Length: 144
Image (cartoon, rainbow, N blue to C red; front, side, top):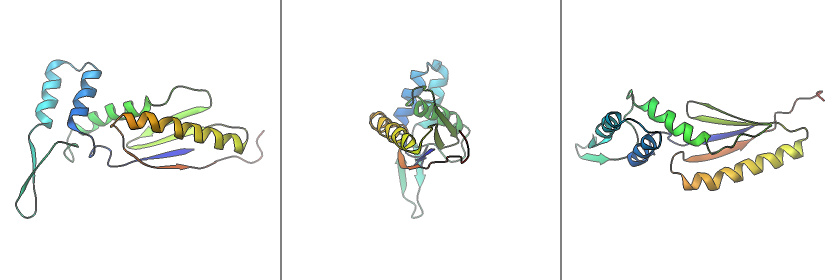
C-alpha cells in the first residue's frame, strides 16, 4: 500500500489551473463564466486591517469547492495507468495505491516503480502538491 499525502489540496492550486481544467473538460461557457466570477477579485482582511488579494485556493466552506476538487482529483488519478495488480483509491484528499505482489521483494520493486513513475508526471502538473509518500507491506500470512 502506498499512501500519498496531498498538501493543502485546494488551498495551493492557482485559479488559472482550475479554469484550464474546466476548459479541458469542456465546461459550458455560462458555467465557465460563473466559475471565473466566483474566483476573481478575492481579498482577505487581515487581523491588522490590511487587505490581501489572492489568486489561489477556494474559499473555505464554499459550495464550489467539492466540484473543483473532483476535477483536481480526477487529474491526479489520471497519473496512473490501468494495470493488473494495481488499484488507486481516492477519498476526499487522500490517495492510496494498492499493489498486489506474491513476494515482499516484488512489492518493493512495484512500489518504487509506481512512486518514481508518478513523480515526473506530477512535476509537470501543478494540480496536486504531494508532500509525503508512505509505503507499507500489508502481506497476509498463511495465504498461497
